[in-house]
Amino acid sequence: MTIVAIQSGKFTTAGNLTGKNAAGKRVHISGSLVEALGYTPESIKTKPISFPLFAVAVTNEYDFNVLDSDGKATGEKKHDTRFEAGSIFATKEEAKAAINADKVLNLEATADLAKVATGLGLTEELLKDLASVAV
Image (cartoon, rainbow, N blue to C red; front, side, top):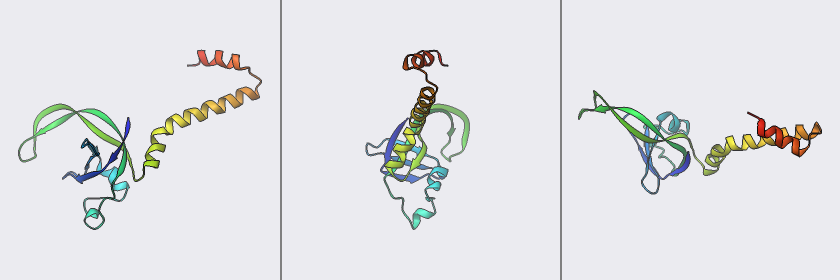
């Protein structure tokens, strides 16, 4: 999982956005994610996408349908990978907060647990022992 800055992109005929970062790495962005930011193939005719956009992206593996020259499925499958956005944001601050949200939540939970343990009079040594056997 990584944050990428989408510097350019265009909508596909399927309504998804194919974005590119500054190095030209392609990022698949589902149409529903882009629409949540207010962009659709129709809307960009009057309101262009305000790049950069910021995506939290991962590489996923898929079995894709092979298409013929007319864009119709041939019945064949091709195993491949796709770098795709799991979420997309208008600002880098939102993207940074999102990618760190789970880590921050776990840190807060640990801090809360330490407060409770201290309130119960548990020693630091006992807390370490409990942490080592916790599932």
